[in-house]
Image (cartoon, rainbow, N blue to C red; front, side, top):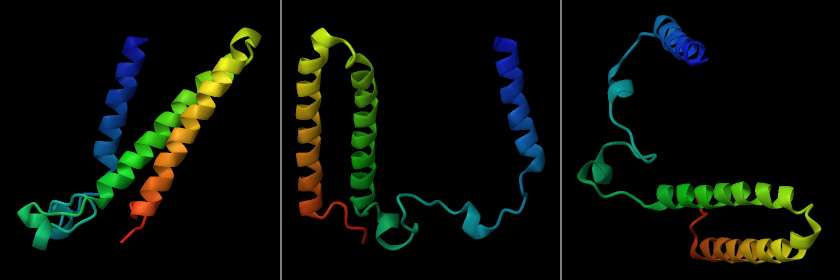
Length: 111
């Protein structure tokens, strides 16, 4: 199985090397980070934190989904159903309060 996975990975890298477009130009090779061009404030190290706030909010709600899946699977156990349900309601309410706070502070406004 390790050989098959290794062969598939090496094959994917090899074929992507053969089939990729080979037309580098100045714009394509310039550094780019956080949605800002590397000129002006971004070139001096000053940049808006807004991109990172959106990324953190995405990760938080993505992790929430990871916590909800085992909850849904274990909810079939009758002895644990009520405590688990209450715990997840509290978890979702806390995340909802965080979302409302971020929304009120303008973290979700794309500028």
